[in-house]
Image (tube, rainbow, N blue to C red; front, side, top):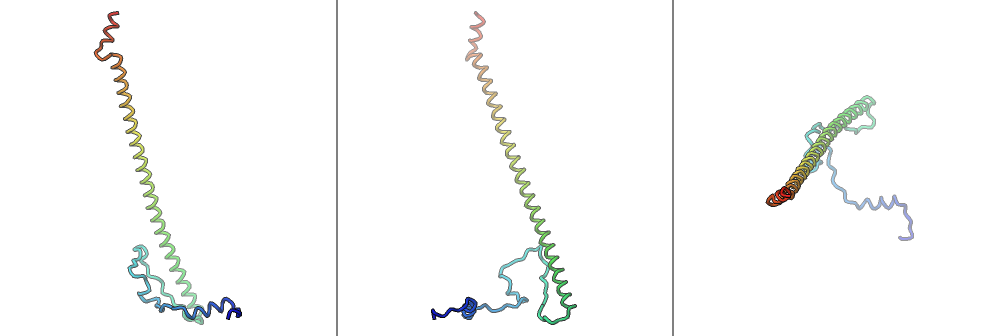
Length: 146
């Protein structure tokens, strides 16, 4: 058997016979969706139900189905775009709010630091005046005597 060279497509065809296949679930069956799946409330339009089973049907019927398909597709695209814009706006608003909160926080911290510096400067001035006056004011008295 090792001397026999078969093309890859034949090997795949032979191997596909052994593949275990799932049962087919019709498109209209409710079991087709995942259990526990809840669709977004903004996408409440029903899915288009188009059947393309007859390849030899009249051109008028085919054109009608194609027109319906593109109309539904455009409607779904518009819904997706509006939802995207809504989510994008909410994301931008959240980012803007976060930036303003951070700016307010930085401003508050800067004000606190400035107040701490002012209080330190005031304490240094008081200490400087206290050193000039001396502990009991005797420095001034001795300079006046002289």
